[in-house]
Image (tube, rainbow, N blue to C red; front, side, top):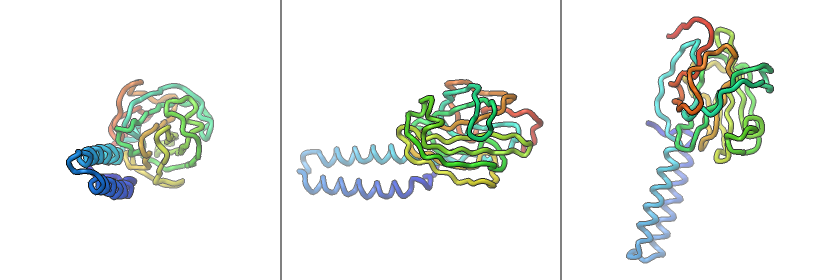
Length: 225
């Protein structure tokens, strides 16, 4: 288990702040009052809570051209047909994964392929399960074209707690299935828009593991390496 790069500076600053707070408590209060002990315990709890937001477990990088793997740890909250209006302009199966504050926040490529389209949108911070969060919240939209010609749209969505989306791709980038493409600080949601002929392998309420759980299968023959 390692600490993700997005959290290293924040955690270092947090340590300095907590050390300063505990030093002040020790200096300005009576040691026998117990306030210093309470301060230290509270500081440790805060640090551990923030630390777990930025854990980055190693996950295998796979390459199965018909499987669509989960882009995030979390829980499946939506599986429904919808019209994707930003880029694909057609009917799709939308599969949404909600990332709670206790989940790993790393986002991984659901398929191997080339990034055909990428956009960042500033926006609101509605709760992630709000019906309008996918079109009004801070978000990114990425369309990946596989070697077999299939196009998948993946959308990172910030929520009420999350205030920062990070991405490490651009149009023309080629990434393998399971590779890291982004990070959402403190949780939120990731949507995947699948073709209508995809075979869905999960159900609403099911927990997912980013880079591991197979969400769906695309039509075609697998060339897994």
